[in-house]
Length: 336
Image (cartoon, rainbow, N blue to C red; front, side, top):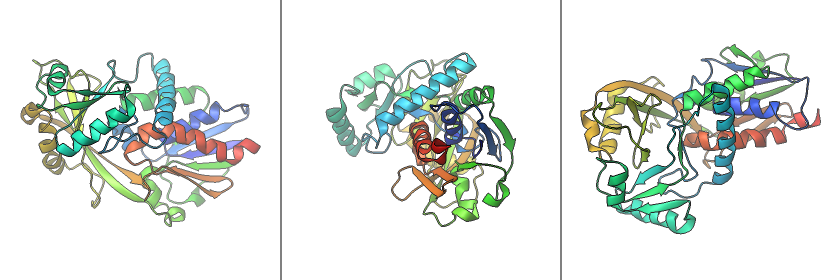
Protein backbone atom coordinates (compact mmCIF):
# COMPACT_ATOMS: atom_id res chain seq x y z
CA UNK A 1 0.00 0.00 0.00
CA UNK A 2 1.39 3.38 -1.04
CA UNK A 3 0.78 6.30 1.31
CA UNK A 4 1.76 9.91 0.68
CA UNK A 5 2.02 12.43 3.50
CA UNK A 6 2.41 16.08 2.53
CA UNK A 7 4.02 18.13 5.29
CA UNK A 8 7.09 17.19 7.34
CA UNK A 9 6.42 19.02 10.58
CA UNK A 10 5.07 17.70 13.88
CA UNK A 11 1.87 16.27 12.39
CA UNK A 12 3.41 14.72 9.28
CA UNK A 13 6.16 12.88 11.16
CA UNK A 14 3.80 11.72 13.90
CA UNK A 15 1.41 10.39 11.27
CA UNK A 16 4.18 8.48 9.53
CA UNK A 17 5.37 6.95 12.80
CA UNK A 18 1.89 5.89 13.91
CA UNK A 19 1.23 4.36 10.48
CA UNK A 20 4.38 2.28 10.84
CA UNK A 21 3.37 1.10 14.29
CA UNK A 22 -0.32 0.43 13.94
CA UNK A 23 -1.59 -3.03 14.82
CA UNK A 24 -1.88 -5.29 12.97
CA UNK A 25 1.15 -4.02 11.06
CA UNK A 26 1.13 -3.90 7.26
CA UNK A 27 4.35 -5.40 5.96
CA UNK A 28 3.87 -3.93 2.49
CA UNK A 29 3.37 -0.34 3.66
CA UNK A 30 5.30 2.22 1.62
CA UNK A 31 5.27 5.78 2.95
CA UNK A 32 6.46 8.86 1.05
CA UNK A 33 6.85 12.15 2.91
CA UNK A 34 6.75 15.36 0.85
CA UNK A 35 7.63 18.88 1.98
CA UNK A 36 8.64 22.02 0.15
CA UNK A 37 11.38 23.10 2.58
CA UNK A 38 12.57 19.93 4.30
CA UNK A 39 12.11 18.13 7.60
CA UNK A 40 10.87 20.58 10.23
CA UNK A 41 11.55 23.51 7.95
CA UNK A 42 8.28 25.30 8.67
CA UNK A 43 6.62 26.56 11.84
CA UNK A 44 7.23 23.29 13.71
CA UNK A 45 10.98 23.74 13.53
CA UNK A 46 10.91 27.09 15.30
CA UNK A 47 8.24 26.15 17.85
CA UNK A 48 9.10 27.24 21.39
CA UNK A 49 8.80 23.69 22.66
CA UNK A 50 6.83 24.42 25.84
CA UNK A 51 4.96 21.19 26.48
CA UNK A 52 2.18 21.16 29.08
CA UNK A 53 -1.64 20.85 29.07
CA UNK A 54 -2.41 24.37 30.37
CA UNK A 55 -1.70 26.36 27.20
CA UNK A 56 -3.53 29.66 26.79
CA UNK A 57 -3.85 33.00 28.51
CA UNK A 58 -6.13 31.67 31.27
CA UNK A 59 -4.16 28.48 32.02
CA UNK A 60 -7.22 26.28 31.74
CA UNK A 61 -6.77 22.55 31.22
CA UNK A 62 -6.87 22.20 27.45
CA UNK A 63 -9.35 19.98 25.65
CA UNK A 64 -7.81 16.48 25.61
CA UNK A 65 -4.77 18.14 27.15
CA UNK A 66 -3.59 15.28 29.35
CA UNK A 67 -4.09 12.74 26.57
CA UNK A 68 -2.17 14.92 24.13
CA UNK A 69 0.63 15.44 26.64
CA UNK A 70 1.06 11.69 27.14
CA UNK A 71 1.06 10.87 23.43
CA UNK A 72 3.70 13.53 22.79
CA UNK A 73 5.80 12.14 25.65
CA UNK A 74 5.71 8.76 23.94
CA UNK A 75 7.12 10.21 20.72
CA UNK A 76 9.74 12.22 22.60
CA UNK A 77 11.06 8.94 23.96
CA UNK A 78 11.20 7.48 20.45
CA UNK A 79 13.18 10.46 19.13
CA UNK A 80 15.48 10.54 22.18
CA UNK A 81 16.37 6.88 21.74
CA UNK A 82 17.26 7.38 18.09
CA UNK A 83 19.49 10.44 18.61
CA UNK A 84 21.08 9.00 21.73
CA UNK A 85 20.20 11.83 24.10
CA UNK A 86 17.07 13.58 25.40
CA UNK A 87 15.38 15.85 22.89
CA UNK A 88 14.12 18.02 25.75
CA UNK A 89 15.78 20.01 28.53
CA UNK A 90 16.95 18.01 31.53
CA UNK A 91 15.05 20.01 34.15
CA UNK A 92 11.30 19.65 34.43
CA UNK A 93 8.88 22.45 35.13
CA UNK A 94 7.53 25.63 33.56
CA UNK A 95 6.89 28.80 35.52
CA UNK A 96 4.01 31.04 34.46
CA UNK A 97 4.58 34.36 36.21
CA UNK A 98 1.43 36.24 37.28
CA UNK A 99 2.13 39.85 36.38
CA UNK A 100 -1.48 41.07 36.30
CA UNK A 101 -4.51 40.77 38.54
CA UNK A 102 -6.25 38.69 35.86
CA UNK A 103 -3.34 36.27 35.67
CA UNK A 104 -3.31 35.84 39.44
CA UNK A 105 -7.00 34.98 39.41
CA UNK A 106 -6.68 32.61 36.47
CA UNK A 107 -3.59 30.84 37.78
CA UNK A 108 -5.05 30.40 41.25
CA UNK A 109 -8.15 28.83 39.71
CA UNK A 110 -5.86 26.44 37.84
CA UNK A 111 -4.18 25.44 41.12
CA UNK A 112 -7.54 24.96 42.84
CA UNK A 113 -8.74 22.71 40.05
CA UNK A 114 -5.60 20.74 39.19
CA UNK A 115 -3.30 20.50 42.21
CA UNK A 116 -0.98 18.70 42.81
CA UNK A 117 -0.05 18.74 39.10
CA UNK A 118 0.37 22.50 39.45
CA UNK A 119 1.41 24.63 42.40
CA UNK A 120 1.16 28.29 43.44
CA UNK A 121 4.55 29.89 44.14
CA UNK A 122 5.00 33.10 46.10
CA UNK A 123 7.06 35.94 44.72
CA UNK A 124 9.94 34.92 46.98
CA UNK A 125 9.79 31.32 45.74
CA UNK A 126 9.80 32.48 42.11
CA UNK A 127 12.87 34.64 42.70
CA UNK A 128 14.65 31.76 44.39
CA UNK A 129 13.86 29.54 41.42
CA UNK A 130 14.89 32.17 38.84
CA UNK A 131 17.27 34.89 40.08
CA UNK A 132 16.58 38.26 38.48
CA UNK A 133 12.92 37.55 37.74
CA UNK A 134 10.30 40.25 38.37
CA UNK A 135 8.70 40.36 41.80
CA UNK A 136 5.47 38.43 41.27
CA UNK A 137 3.94 35.09 42.24
CA UNK A 138 3.41 32.37 39.68
CA UNK A 139 1.94 29.09 38.53
CA UNK A 140 4.43 26.22 38.68
CA UNK A 141 3.61 23.47 36.15
CA UNK A 142 5.60 20.65 37.69
CA UNK A 143 5.78 18.21 34.79
CA UNK A 144 6.05 20.79 32.02
CA UNK A 145 8.88 20.15 29.57
CA UNK A 146 10.98 22.32 27.31
CA UNK A 147 11.37 20.40 24.05
CA UNK A 148 14.17 21.16 21.60
CA UNK A 149 11.80 21.17 18.64
CA UNK A 150 14.34 20.92 15.83
CA UNK A 151 16.20 18.06 17.52
CA UNK A 152 12.93 16.27 18.24
CA UNK A 153 11.83 16.53 14.62
CA UNK A 154 15.16 15.24 13.36
CA UNK A 155 15.02 12.33 15.80
CA UNK A 156 11.49 11.38 14.82
CA UNK A 157 12.39 11.63 11.13
CA UNK A 158 15.41 9.38 11.65
CA UNK A 159 13.17 6.82 13.39
CA UNK A 160 10.79 6.90 10.41
CA UNK A 161 13.60 6.77 7.86
CA UNK A 162 15.08 3.69 9.53
CA UNK A 163 11.72 2.00 9.00
CA UNK A 164 11.68 2.77 5.28
CA UNK A 165 9.93 6.13 4.94
CA UNK A 166 11.32 8.12 2.01
CA UNK A 167 11.45 11.90 1.68
CA UNK A 168 10.89 14.07 -1.37
CA UNK A 169 11.39 17.83 -1.36
CA UNK A 170 8.67 19.28 -3.54
CA UNK A 171 6.20 22.16 -3.43
CA UNK A 172 2.66 20.85 -3.87
CA UNK A 173 0.39 23.45 -5.45
CA UNK A 174 -2.58 21.17 -6.17
CA UNK A 175 -3.74 17.70 -5.17
CA UNK A 176 -3.71 16.82 -8.87
CA UNK A 177 0.09 16.76 -8.70
CA UNK A 178 0.07 13.74 -6.40
CA UNK A 179 -0.14 10.45 -8.28
CA UNK A 180 0.36 6.74 -7.62
CA UNK A 181 -0.85 6.74 -4.03
CA UNK A 182 -3.52 4.69 -2.29
CA UNK A 183 -3.91 7.10 0.63
CA UNK A 184 -3.09 10.81 0.78
CA UNK A 185 -2.72 12.58 4.12
CA UNK A 186 -2.19 16.34 4.17
CA UNK A 187 -0.49 17.85 7.21
CA UNK A 188 0.30 21.10 5.47
CA UNK A 189 -0.17 23.63 8.29
CA UNK A 190 -0.45 27.21 7.07
CA UNK A 191 0.21 26.06 3.49
CA UNK A 192 -3.21 24.39 3.54
CA UNK A 193 -4.76 27.67 2.47
CA UNK A 194 -2.63 27.79 -0.69
CA UNK A 195 -4.01 24.52 -2.09
CA UNK A 196 -7.05 25.24 -4.31
CA UNK A 197 -8.95 22.09 -3.33
CA UNK A 198 -8.82 23.19 0.32
CA UNK A 199 -9.60 26.87 -0.12
CA UNK A 200 -13.22 26.39 1.02
CA UNK A 201 -12.19 25.47 4.56
CA UNK A 202 -12.72 28.04 7.31
CA UNK A 203 -9.10 28.45 8.38
CA UNK A 204 -7.02 31.49 9.31
CA UNK A 205 -3.30 31.89 9.64
CA UNK A 206 -1.32 33.65 12.35
CA UNK A 207 2.30 34.69 11.90
CA UNK A 208 4.61 34.24 14.85
CA UNK A 209 8.13 35.59 15.26
CA UNK A 210 10.70 34.49 17.83
CA UNK A 211 13.93 36.27 18.70
CA UNK A 212 17.17 34.71 19.90
CA UNK A 213 19.32 36.64 22.36
CA UNK A 214 22.87 36.01 23.60
CA UNK A 215 22.81 34.80 27.21
CA UNK A 216 25.18 36.61 29.65
CA UNK A 217 28.30 34.53 30.28
CA UNK A 218 28.39 35.57 33.93
CA UNK A 219 24.89 34.24 34.63
CA UNK A 220 23.80 30.61 34.99
CA UNK A 221 21.24 29.38 32.44
CA UNK A 222 17.58 29.52 33.36
CA UNK A 223 16.57 26.56 35.52
CA UNK A 224 13.19 26.37 33.77
CA UNK A 225 11.22 27.97 30.97
CA UNK A 226 9.26 31.13 31.78
CA UNK A 227 5.87 32.08 30.41
CA UNK A 228 3.58 35.03 31.05
CA UNK A 229 2.65 37.54 28.38
CA UNK A 230 5.75 36.29 26.59
CA UNK A 231 7.91 33.18 26.95
CA UNK A 232 11.63 32.83 27.63
CA UNK A 233 13.62 29.62 27.45
CA UNK A 234 17.19 28.49 26.98
CA UNK A 235 18.25 27.15 23.59
CA UNK A 236 19.74 23.69 23.35
CA UNK A 237 23.32 25.00 23.53
CA UNK A 238 22.57 26.98 26.72
CA UNK A 239 24.42 29.99 25.29
CA UNK A 240 21.37 31.82 23.95
CA UNK A 241 17.73 32.20 24.91
CA UNK A 242 14.62 32.16 22.76
CA UNK A 243 11.99 34.80 23.42
CA UNK A 244 8.58 35.04 21.83
CA UNK A 245 6.29 35.42 20.26
CA UNK A 246 4.43 37.85 18.06
CA UNK A 247 0.82 37.14 17.15
CA UNK A 248 0.29 38.74 13.75
CA UNK A 249 -3.12 38.35 12.15
CA UNK A 250 -2.50 40.63 9.18
CA UNK A 251 0.92 40.24 7.60
CA UNK A 252 2.37 40.73 4.15
CA UNK A 253 4.75 37.75 4.15
CA UNK A 254 6.16 35.06 6.41
CA UNK A 255 9.71 36.46 6.46
CA UNK A 256 11.39 37.43 9.72
CA UNK A 257 11.19 41.15 10.57
CA UNK A 258 13.57 41.70 13.50
CA UNK A 259 12.64 45.33 14.20
CA UNK A 260 8.95 44.53 14.37
CA UNK A 261 9.59 41.43 16.49
CA UNK A 262 11.80 43.28 18.97
CA UNK A 263 9.29 46.11 19.35
CA UNK A 264 6.47 43.67 20.03
CA UNK A 265 8.22 41.06 22.18
CA UNK A 266 10.80 42.87 24.28
CA UNK A 267 8.50 45.03 26.47
CA UNK A 268 6.56 41.91 27.50
CA UNK A 269 9.69 39.80 27.99
CA UNK A 270 11.49 42.47 30.02
CA UNK A 271 8.50 42.64 32.35
CA UNK A 272 9.45 39.07 33.29
CA UNK A 273 13.25 39.31 33.17
CA UNK A 274 14.31 42.99 33.20
CA UNK A 275 17.95 42.31 32.29
CA UNK A 276 16.92 40.98 28.85
CA UNK A 277 16.90 44.54 27.52
CA UNK A 278 20.71 44.60 27.57
CA UNK A 279 21.21 41.34 25.65
CA UNK A 280 22.32 41.46 21.99
CA UNK A 281 20.12 40.04 19.25
CA UNK A 282 21.47 36.88 17.60
CA UNK A 283 18.68 35.95 15.24
CA UNK A 284 14.99 36.25 14.44
CA UNK A 285 12.75 33.43 13.21
CA UNK A 286 9.28 33.52 11.69
CA UNK A 287 6.59 31.05 10.72
CA UNK A 288 2.83 30.85 10.23
CA UNK A 289 0.41 28.55 11.96
CA UNK A 290 -3.19 27.80 11.07
CA UNK A 291 -6.27 27.85 13.28
CA UNK A 292 -9.89 26.74 13.01
CA UNK A 293 -12.77 28.95 14.23
CA UNK A 294 -13.22 26.63 17.23
CA UNK A 295 -9.47 26.60 17.89
CA UNK A 296 -9.52 22.81 17.93
CA UNK A 297 -7.48 20.56 15.64
CA UNK A 298 -9.20 19.58 12.41
CA UNK A 299 -9.36 16.05 10.99
CA UNK A 300 -11.18 16.37 7.69
CA UNK A 301 -12.04 13.78 5.03
CA UNK A 302 -11.90 15.01 1.46
CA UNK A 303 -12.67 11.49 0.24
CA UNK A 304 -12.17 7.97 1.65
CA UNK A 305 -8.56 8.12 0.46
CA UNK A 306 -7.76 11.81 1.03
CA UNK A 307 -7.48 13.25 4.53
CA UNK A 308 -6.41 16.51 6.12
CA UNK A 309 -4.92 17.09 9.57
CA UNK A 310 -4.44 20.75 10.47
CA UNK A 311 -5.58 23.57 12.76
CA UNK A 312 -3.10 23.00 15.60
CA UNK A 313 -2.62 26.74 16.15
CA UNK A 314 -0.17 27.31 19.00
CA UNK A 315 -0.81 23.82 20.40
CA UNK A 316 0.92 21.74 17.74
CA UNK A 317 3.39 20.19 20.16
CA UNK A 318 0.60 19.24 22.55
CA UNK A 319 -1.80 17.78 19.98
CA UNK A 320 0.17 16.44 17.02
CA UNK A 321 0.79 12.91 18.30
CA UNK A 322 -2.74 12.42 19.63
CA UNK A 323 -4.43 13.77 16.51
CA UNK A 324 -2.20 11.77 14.16
CA UNK A 325 -3.22 8.62 16.01
CA UNK A 326 -6.88 9.56 15.80
CA UNK A 327 -6.64 10.35 12.08
CA UNK A 328 -5.25 6.90 11.32
CA UNK A 329 -8.17 5.28 13.13
CA UNK A 330 -10.55 7.06 10.78
CA UNK A 331 -8.80 6.42 7.47
CA UNK A 332 -9.36 3.68 4.94
CA UNK A 333 -6.08 2.03 5.91
CA UNK A 334 -7.81 0.07 8.65
CA UNK A 335 -9.87 -1.77 6.05
CA UNK A 336 -6.98 -2.59 3.70
